[in-house]
Image 1 (cartoon, one colour):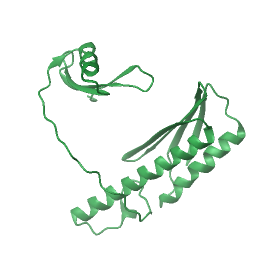
Image 2: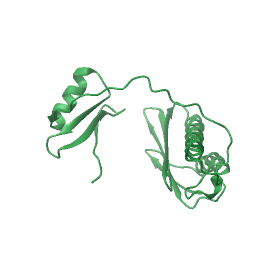
Image 3: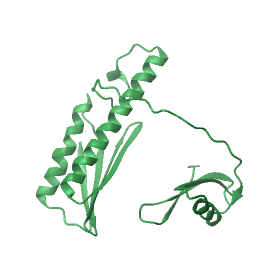
Image 4: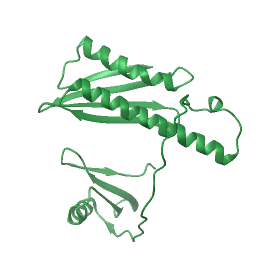
Length: 182
């Protein structure tokens, strides 16, 4: 797998690029077939906080992880650990799907790149379900409502598009909007 390593407010040295590629090459052992996709790595430094963002698009799944640390090399190590956990969870999900469908074919015959790891990840436990009526509102009102209830996100019916949207508070203090693709 190839990786594009980009620096944001940071010059990428040969040693740093080699370290990133070496650590991310560990992920290839989880796949039976060589990966033909290209991964993207962004390294940045803001106020002595080192941030590593990795995105790996695969067929049927998008692996993405981000980590911040005082040390760039520690942040790289931690982001690779996050990606490994995501891969294990994806494998567990695929194994469960195959078992539930009663399908006897091996994982290596699936269309998407599949993992060769035998570890099982524990299930998530759903502890609460909420249902509520979505009031049509504009984005500014949704942000105001989100801040009033003290949450990091708010689901609402966008009065302009008449679709369900989500506003959320970003780590940098600004806001984001999630809209369904049409």
